[in-house]
Length: 383
Image (cartoon, rainbow, N blue to C red):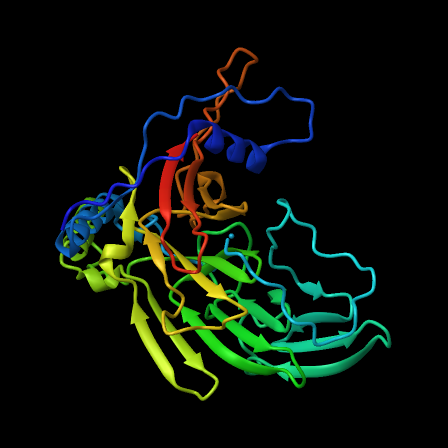
């Protein structure tokens, strides 16, 4: 299979997005412009090439305690043209909507309203409040009682459809979250609310954006590798060698993200992202895959499922415009439980000491299609 080369986005576009993601309200001078060069993302030649690349990069990044060099101690949390939906309710009164960074690009939030209804999800139950009477007019249980992480949930609403986001725990994210299963629930709000689909992707929920009625959501997953348990007297160098050997024997299926979709009738469809739909930058860890899922709330989940594509990269922040979806990786937000280290005397600092070198932020861009079909142009850059 011929290698598929995706062209890089322009330097100006990436620089603009980076500034938007990292701008400060303080009086400090803006960061200097950076030459972005000709960086590009590529698809693997074939499945054998994907397996070889993922194994080799992951083996370079595994340590004596697995990926991250420490045993996890806790879980941490990080456009199509659409005709307007037919109105099933009265003309909406004047009302505010969710604050968004980009006009026309909606973001998940804890509360959504169309002016006539206020929709929220808490403790696994979706509730609809009539804005005129301020009373709950309908409710729907979405999860089992006591589900881990089943507190307040984010949602997106388009017409009479709502997509609810239940996030799973993750050891590399910006805030704490209990362990749980990542799940998205598509709900029909017309009349008595009912569940249309349940979507369970492998990995943790990063974020999502909606243009019109089309939602693109990003998940992050890692390879499913069981590392052998060495004896207590084995050195860290030997532990690392053993873990590298385990990585190099792991099949491709351990990396490819899985997805399970349950329809309204209870029928379950399981799928895996195909290796030809996985791209990678020139340098990557092999320990994380970002997957973009596409769902048109107006159409519901079709035979194509969520039409997923994946990128062998790390990421924790999502930003969207009318034509592009950006995923950035900021190493400062990636936490790994730390093992005790020897305490050393800290030398006194002086005003002449050189400032600490900032870690680079990596920006991956997916140029979204003008139709529902996922024909993306992924690009990447370090800034």
